[in-house]
Image (cartoon, rainbow, N blue to C red; front, side):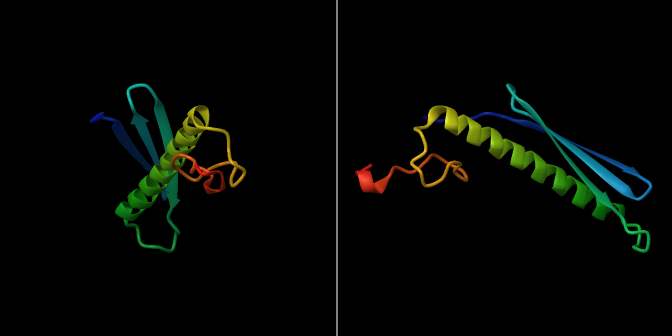
Length: 103
């Protein structure tokens, strides 16, 4: 069955005194998550704002990605069968059937 949705992402960058901060907001229409990241320039380094933007934005997106995976794992636990004993918390995806039980 085809499934198409649009999620909106907004990225905000702020720079002040050698520190760049980023905030990324994901709006799925039903949920909103916010990731944060920062980058600090060493005072002896050349001032290249794009590098601070890239680092801070990347870190904010990593934070957001971690939150999104955490939400998905909680959702999986809410609809999946109990853990089989191999791992109390699967990395991603649905738990695999226990092959020793013919599943």
